[in-house]
Length: 508
Image 1: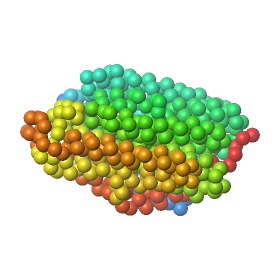
Image 2: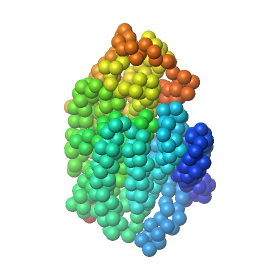
Image 3: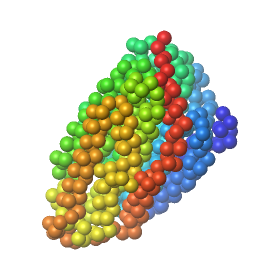
Image 4: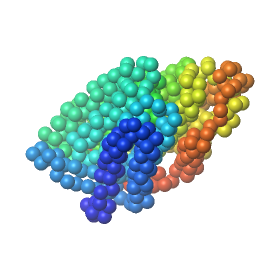
């Protein structure tokens, strides 16, 4: 608890400052959209700066929770306001803070309707997502986990495309239904232990049957979030209809909450059930990686293609987390497993940058032509050379080009998969070919060639605001591609600690 007294209220500020800022944006900007934008940018920028200690003051040598805050909340049921971060949650919070600023800048011109409400929705979402990553009380986690759906539901439902109501209802129902099972699991754990403390649950002995039911409950909640095959169908619809900012946050942050849930709940609380049912998750992950890669090839809509590509890339995350058990069974050690879990985490952060960047590039084109269909473009490089440079770079990163962050996580998971099973590694490596196929084919049809449509002839290249967004993301992708060490250092101690939980049976 030392760290808690040292760092005071850092996490509470990061959660509540954007939410209070959203109220100010709503009030101040009702009649003044320019003021709403300026205020939203100031709040998200300040939150980002206040969140930097999570990186600079983070102690990489320990797996213990840092920046801890613990206060009683609902004492009757022993519910606490309990926050803290470790090597898993700190990188994801920093990613959320980074995109919090970018999303405000992305909606600067394209959003004309109810600007203050749009900006406020994203600020609330930012605060709630940081709450999800830092909550160490089971019920507090659940409240943040559910509350986060509301602003996203509104963003897609109000500022989305023509089928926005269908898409937002589908998104809400899928994710809500999954999380009901998680709530039942959390209540069961509370009854068994008398506490809502997630870290106390990590050490709670449970019968095998109870573990399996809990595992399936958590799987229902987190598989929808990632999303895993076959509960992925809401994602393409939500992406296609969502405004650019909504797509960016959905792809960059929200999908990561599923992977984070597995790390925080499934693996340490139900290790025996996870080991017994790892074949299920590995099977679904490999289907996502291979089959969804082929589905992406068939898309005519740029956003749909990137959405399916996200499902395929997130398959690596679940694969990296669950091959740990096979490796432990095969080798009796956890070194290879550590590589897989680290790879999964690196892939989550990397995919955040790359998918966010790809949706922003589609947003740039959409703002000009108001079409997402591939056939409406062709030869964009002739009229928008700077834009073409960024778009091709991001597509290369998406296909896992060495030197970009997209390669690092996937390579680590494939290396680790070899120690589990050759065929796991073979099927996982196929995605590098499929990823290159749909990414390069998209580049060929949209960016290169002769100018095919009259609407491409009159396109204006990116302005300073768009250049700033795309440059920032390109630098981040290159940085973590060439030097992933800072991220791996943050993870190391937490990964080792997680693996100790995994190899220890909790069956009573």
